[in-house]
Image (tube, rainbow, N blue to C red; front, side, top):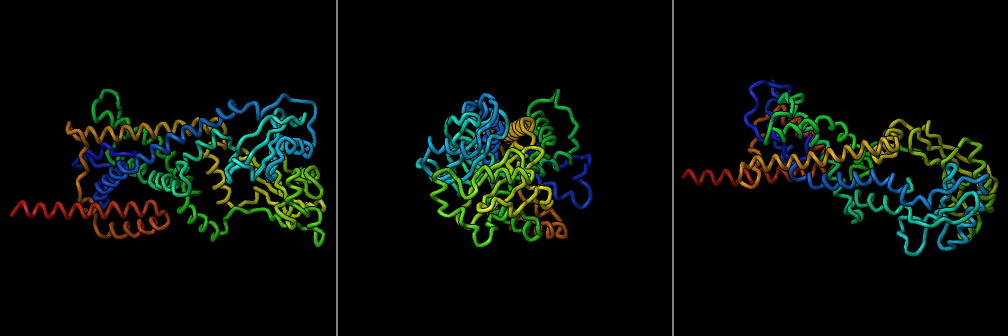
Length: 468
């Protein structure tokens, strides 16, 4: 795989010994793949480089976060934990501002409880202020901004947002979607080109110059291509445009992720315990029967740690208690609890999720380095490092192709004209459909074709003038 020009792109004509990609009617496709691989690599590689660098840092941010925020997140193990309501009251005494939007009780011995507040001045509206409480003593250990369902603290949040949108908001997300849209195309093109030359097992040792760069580029790309396909596919699942199409497809197939109903189920008196919800939340998130009974009801339904308790949004809503463990084995069960009666009104089990909903959950968690913990994070760092090296080697091959001119030469034009119509027409139709569902693949590809045609026409007219 390559994110930049492959030296297979620099060696024409095709090899004398036919390979898998150079026999039969598919032989003319190789120059087309070569040209697409070259231009996509040259133009998209800068976006991929940023994504790889920030992805490398993000994977490394998990252990760094544990060290940097150890005071807030860990405590000496005590004899017994205080009721959750008392821990929340301690947090509210230290931080009366804002509204309690969630509580994450201490998930294990030696871990603090997090009380999440929204509407706090100076805290981003999409973030929460996490107040860390010693579950044994009620001591407030500190408060930090938190983002997302994984509980990212300031260091990981900053890297995550830069990786996702360069900290430019919704418009910035176009960069990461562009990278994810093209990564699999460049990877697939590189694999096809490499295997078509039968160089998958050729040794790099003993070679030099452009051939050695090609050997390194192709060998590493071949071994890591599957990882790049995975990163591309999972990255697109929560992208802005392609992600919306994927969500629509899952919904139409009945494969969307189920959610627990937060409507209170206690009849005409359901809202009595939650009346004045905002005032109650401001005083500690206690509605109706209170946090302790709600947590006990969730425990009775089998929701063990780690869990998050979400207070009712209004007088007509229930508490929602959900498991938040996204490492293996995944725990994502959720229940709704009536604030008036303390009875469970709805249950959603992860075991009952549709297949695509489970695969999406696991894919995203594997992509973000959560599913298998430290091993997952190390694997992602190695994959990101491989992508960085491939980009560097790709640009180096382009430079070496210039043979001292100081700039790499492009791949010859006209590859598409060599493809038979019975292959080209279905290929173009399939590409058009794919481009519709993955617009940041389709739009740039259409741009490549327009530029290619215009440049070809200019070259053709210059050639005619020269012969006159």
